[in-house]
Image 1: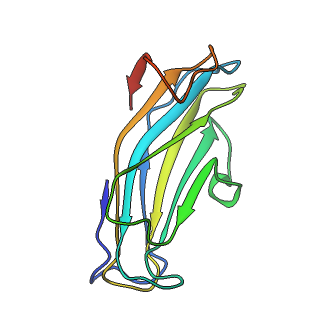
Image 2: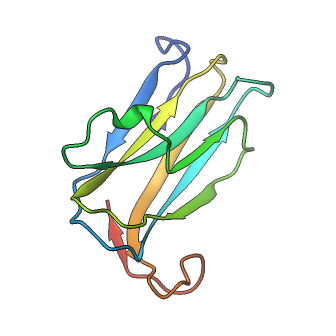
Image 3: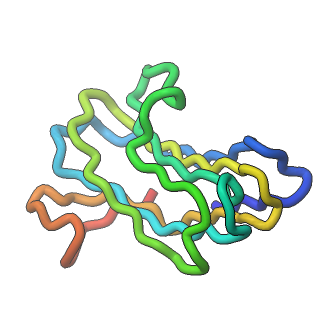
Length: 133
């Protein structure tokens, strides 16, 4: 996903990617993606990136706490984000959301989202079995 921040985008506009649904799990899964957030320096210039986990049939998901979030200028580099998914009692999906803030010189990009087994506790190192979204 690439979120262009210049016109016609306006402050607080959002772009979203919705994954397919995955089966319920007792845990042992982790989510990973790479992101790039670079642009104008200063408070509320670059924007926000959030990842939500939504269970099938759940409403009001985007008003809940994000499983991952970052905001502001993160530098001109790709950064890996990882987090454990935790138990999901119903089928679930990921919603990746980018939000534009003030500057038109502030783009957000996301690449290579993955869901993988991390039940061995080594979710931030070593070989993994990936399931691309």
